Image (cartoon, rainbow, N blue to C red; front, side, top):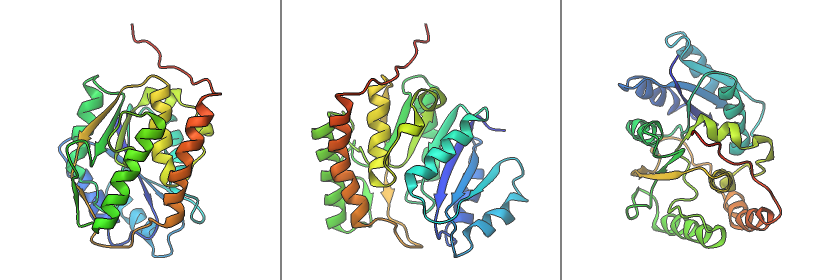
Length: 248
């Protein structure tokens, strides 16, 4: 078993899932994979089950009934990882918008001790987004600026979904208290980790829009992020956060 687990939530990703799995397993650094499928009617889970025969004890699958939300998928995966010996846990999309080669760069940021949480950032070194319509680029970029203004997070890409956590981050955060399911989930995890005293480091990446399958982004997900950050900020005034334990 690897010390690292890549969690990939899926819904109708039959065009991408086999390729992303094989690409990750072909990397020099070993990673295990946990696919969390929300009842994809296109047979995504069946493809994963077939691949499990080739990647015994490295590829795992959790099937859920219906679309229960990105945030709940990751929380389920985090809890699953904490029941095992994984030291580094990753969030990653199935559609190759996140380059699997960058997994090692996120790992190195955390394993070196410089970061507790490493974020694959589209905006820390300019705007590194490929094949998105300009309107969506601007919406995403200024949404992150808005989140920074309200939350005071010193992170250029607050909504990034390509992340590595050291185990201690997930052990410290009360995962049952994470409220948001969609767009705002990524903001809430970064905000909470920061409030708990963890070091967050941005690693520059190039984000490439999916070529196959359909995007899951919609206006309700964006709206959750827009108003959710205000709720997070106000709620933090009345909340005590568990703190990172000293290693000394």
